[in-house]
Length: 151
Length: 256
Length: 106
Image (cartoon, rainbow over all chains, first blue to last red):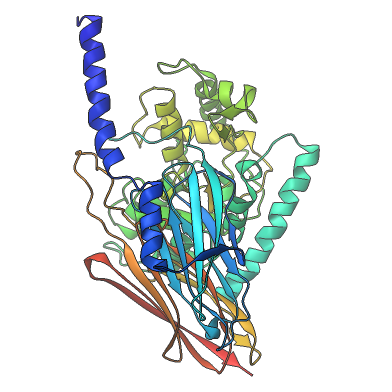
C-alpha cells in the first residue's frame, strides 16, 4: 500500500505531465492579437458594422453555431471582401477566413465552430475600401456531464 | 428528394411546436425542450441537422443489394415503407421469443433474409440504416406494442432503471426522475425520454444509438457498461419507450 | 455514396438574394487530440470550401481545425442567371468532394 506522500507526488507529477503539453499548444490573447495583426497589418480596426451571433452559454464546445453579419451594400464599389474569425484559447487562434464580394448580395455567413474553453471570439470584416470593422463576443462553454469511456 | 425533406423540415417545426403544447398538460419533456434555441434550430433545419447526412446514407444503403441473397432492404420493404416502425420497437420478431431493438431487427433481416454478416454495433452503416428507418417515424407518437410477452422484459428494464449502480451508487431514476430539470455541472438533467434516437450528440461529434448513450450514463456512474449485445439494453429501452409512450419521435435528434 | 446535403432554391427571380446551405460528412480531426494509445491522431481537416456560379467563384472559406466536425456553411448569393451552383471541398489526405445543383433564374 503506497504511503500518502508518494501518492500525492505521483498525482502531482501526472498532473504536470498532462497539463504541460496542453498549455504549450494553446493560443493566448497575445497569439490572437498576432494572428489579427497578420490580417490587418498597419490598418486600424474599428468596432461596429459587424454582428457576431453565438449562444452566450454554449452547451457543448464541440459544435458551436456562429453567424457573422456585416452591414454593407455589397455593391462593386462598396462591399465586404473578407470576414475573419479568431479565438483566444483554442490550440490555434484562427477559426476561418471567408472571401466574399458583390455576388453575395449580403455579407452574412454561418458555420459551426469548436471552442476548447470559455473565451472571447473576434470577427473582423475587411471592406473593399480597405477598412476593418470588428465585433467580439464572450462565450461560456459548459462541459458535458456524462461522457465516453476511452476503450 | 430534397423538396420532400424541406417539406418534412417544415413539418418538424410544427412537431416541435406541438411537443411544447403537449408539455402543458403532460409533465414529460423531451430533451429537445431542455436545449437552447441554437441547438433546437440545428435539429429543426434538415440541412443543418448533421443526423440528416446519415439518413441520406441510410436511404442509399436501404436500396443497395447485400449478402448471398443479393437483395436490398427495398426489394422486400419498398423505399420509404418504414413509417411507424421505430415508434413500436423494441418488439418480439416473428418466430422469436425475445425482444430485439431496431438495430437488432435490422441485423436479423441482414442475417436471415439477405444472408449477410450482421453490421457491427455503432458502425456507420448500422446507424445510418437505423436513422433512415427512424426518420420515417418522425412526428409519430411512441407506441409500444401491447404484446404481453414483453411485460417481464419491461419489468426487468424498470428494475435496472431503479437499481443503484457503480462507484457513485446512483440509479437512473435518481438523476432522471428525482432530479430532472436541475443542473449537473452546467447541464440541465433531462428526463431521459428516448425521443430522438439515433441522435447526433455534439459530445460525440457523431451519430450514436441509445445504447451508446446508456453506456455513457453507466460510465458516468462509474459502473461497468454492459456489452453491446447485452439484453439489459433492450430491457431498459423497452421500459424507457413505455415511459415515453405517446411522446413524439424526433429522429434524428440533436443533443449536447 | 453521397456524403453532402445541399439546400439551395431551385428557382429564383433575377437579382434575388438566395441562401445556400451545405453540410458535409467529415471528421475535422484537429491534430491536437491524443488517441486511445496516447499518440496524437494526425490532423485531417477540410482546408477550403469554394462555391461557384456557372464556373465563376462567388464565395470561399479557408477552414482551420476549429471548424466543427461535419462542417456546415451557409452563405448568400445574388441570382444572376440560370445555371449551376458548384460546391467544392478540399483538404488533408487528398480530400476532394464536388457537388453541383441547378438553379433556374427568371
